[in-house]
Image (tube, rainbow, N blue to C red; front, side):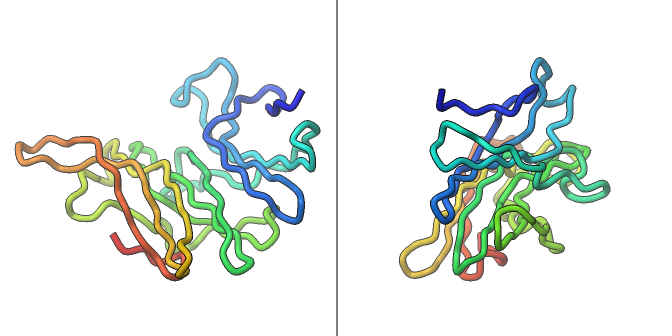
Length: 182
């Protein structure tokens, strides 16, 4: 009672948002019994509830795009609202497992449109990121401050002086939720 999981799927990296008394959850639709690299995590699920006990499962709301920066998988949806628009920031993963922060928007939480200029966030020159190799730029978290400025924190890696890399936390800001400053 009070638990949710789409039948036959695993419930990974989720985000809750409330609209008009209804709680919505967005999540990676993983496959039970498979690791992420052996069974694609290429769609986001969507479910809603008015009491957090009884859930209505909706059609998957977003999927990987062949040939795009999210051509392999999509991870970690995070949804926030500003001025009546819902912004879903998610990790797009290409075929080389280079990750980048992408954006999709919605006005109703059911129909999502990917931003044509994806990705919206990559680490700055300080980052150890390459398009052609496993590179971390994922798991974003966005909040909008009282003055309307949005801040995004995300997991990445930093170049070290000896040519290696270290785990790092990237931070970006935006006034319009689309163009982000490292």
